[in-house]
Image (cartoon, rainbow, N blue to C red; front, side, top):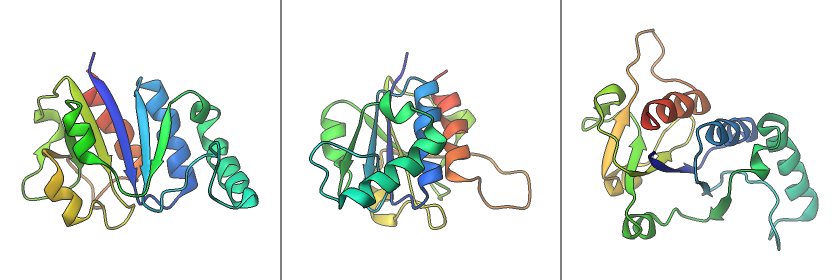
Length: 161
């Protein structure tokens, strides 16, 4: 079974974060790394004001339905991609790009760190350049992309096969 870590960088919506937790739990994701301005559930020694941490935790829980208690997670100001590479993970960005491989054509390695970017702008060029691979989901409608939590589910389904 493929070992998968999910990295959510600069995701704005607590509902998307909660959905990503719930979907990740369903696919057996080993860890979620939340980074940038991505909201995250309450943690021990939380640096945020207590009422802010509680509010964000409640909003994430509303969609995660307890998955935030089941999937190990950590917050990083900036994702430490090099540490993941050193641990044998291949950094795979989910992004439309000139070098992207269509998801169904991608040969999944044994260890994947799936990088997700901001809902509208996606993964920054700086982070894309640090990815080992970029994958994208083919679109057949008029919209350019799926919601980030939906795209995560589609990608995790394929990567976990």
